[in-house]
Image 1 (cartoon, rainbow, N blue to C red):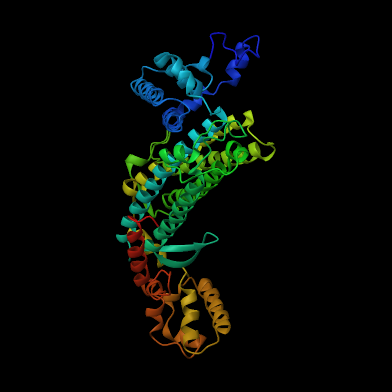
Image 2 (image 1 turned 180 degrees about the vertical axis):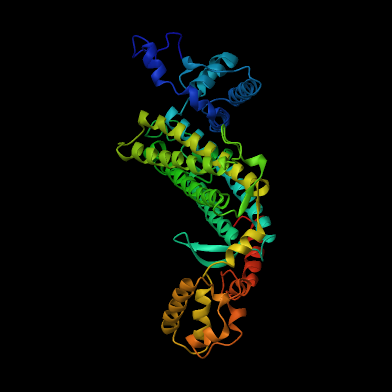
Length: 463
C-alpha cells in the first residue's frame, strides 16, 4: 500500500482514472464494512493464536479495527472511490491508526477469501432478519384467520367460482407457503454458514493458519474443504436468490388477490386510507399501490436470480473479477424482499377490512354448491359419475330459468331423482357446504381450528 497507488512494483503506473472508477466497488460494497471488520478481527486473532504475529500485534490490530468501526458508525470514516473497495479502505485506515503493524493484517489472506467471508457473514445476518419478518407475517395472517374462521369466501379455480371456503382457510394457505419459505431459508443458511477464510487467493497459504479457529470465532459451522471452491463458490447466493424469488412469488399471489378483492367487481375488502393512494385527476379513486408495488418488485428479484445464474455459468476456477457483480444483485434482493415483507405485513394487519356481508352475498349467489348435490346423491347410493351428470343437467336448466339451486322446489328435486328429500336444502347451504369438508387439511371449521392451533404453535419454534 504505497502512495504510488499501484498494486506492487510489478506495475509502473497507476490505473487510468476512468478505469479506476469502473473497477471500484466501494460505492456498493460499503454495505459489507461491519462484516469486513468482524472478519478481519477474527483473522487477526487467529494470526496471534497461531504465532504468525505476536499477541501484542494482534491486540493492536483488534483495537485499531474496533476504532475504524466506531469511526464509521459515527460518520467520521467515509471511504471514497479512491479506496477501490471496502476491504482496501478498512486496511488503509487501520494502517493510518496503527502504523506498520496494520500492514500485517493481510498476512495469510487474500481479498478473494476475504470478500467471500464478508458476503457470507452479511447474508447469514440478513437471512435471520428475513426469517423473523416471515414469522411476523405469519402472525398477522393467523390473527386475521382466527377472527374469520366462520366467515365465508368464494373459492376459485381458473378464476371461476368453485366452492365456498372459510376465509381463515384461505389465509392459512399463505401461512403454509411462508412456512416453506422459512424452512428453505433455514436450509440455505446451512450452506451460507461455511467459512472460506484461509483459502487464500485460490490455493491456501504457506503460513500455519488455523482455519477452524477463525471459523469458530465468526460463528461458522464448518470450513470449505477445497480452497478453489472456497473462493469461487456462489451457490449459496444463487440458492438465496431462488428462495427469495419464491418468497416474492407468494407475496405477489397474495397481492394479486388483494388487488382483485378491492376492485368494484369483487368488493370483498375495503382498503384503508393508510395503505392506499388516490388518483391525480379522478377524485373517487382509491388505488391499491402497496400490493401493486409488491407484484411489480417481484420481477426485479427474479431478474437478480437470472443475473446470478448467468454470471456463474461460464466462470473457470477460481476467482474472477466477474464475481464483483454478485454484490449489487444480492444486496438489492435482500432489501427488496425485506421492504415487501414489511409493506404487505402492514397491509394485512391494518390496511384492509374484509366485508362479511358482501362475502356472504357472494357465496349465496352462485352454483358453487353443485358438487355437494352430487355428493348428496352419491351418499344415497347413486354412482358418482351418474350423479355428476344429473347435477350438470339441473345446473343447465336452472340457469335457463334464472334460478339458483336453493330456489328449486322439492318437487323439482324429486323430478331429477327420487332420493332427494327436504334435507337437500341444508346440504347445499353455504355454511354447511364448508363445514362438511372436514377431511384433514380441508376447509371444514373443525379442521381450520386445528390448522390454526398448529400454525400458532410454530410461531415461536425453530421448525
